[in-house]
Amino acid sequence: MERLTEIYEEYSELVFKYLMTLCRDSHIAEELTQDTFYKAIQSIERFNGTCKMSVWLCQIAKHTYYQYVDKQMKQPELVTLQSGPSIEQLLIAQEDKIEIYRKMHQLKEPFREVLHLRLLGGLSFQEIGEVLGKNENWARVTFYRAKVKLLEEGKQNEPM
Image (cartoon, rainbow, N blue to C red):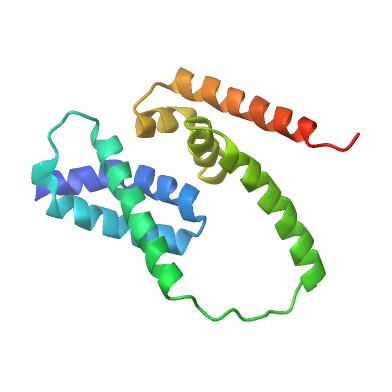
């Protein structure tokens, strides 16, 4: 039991940050982090050490997030309008975000995942390397190449 506590203390922040890159909501990420460690405890005997503990936990976290999304798609919540920016302003901002995410989504792996982890999750290059089973330098180079690809894509789609 003491070893499980050590694992949680060592990796919970990394798993939380990884989940933040996926869902961008701290409350959901916290809940999914707890679910991730619950599932990890249930299946700890299946961890064979062929990968780092952090990679194994992030894989569980990713699957936990996908299960959460599937559940949300089956049970859509009612959307309520709040006071604040106008609907037109929200739509324009949303269109810009959607276009950026669309371009990011069109990137091939590992560029897409590195961008998500860095920009949305706020993970350091060292943490990205750990999550993806690579080193810090690989994460830096991959992030730079992903940015270049996004910029090239943006220039190709600009009207002349």
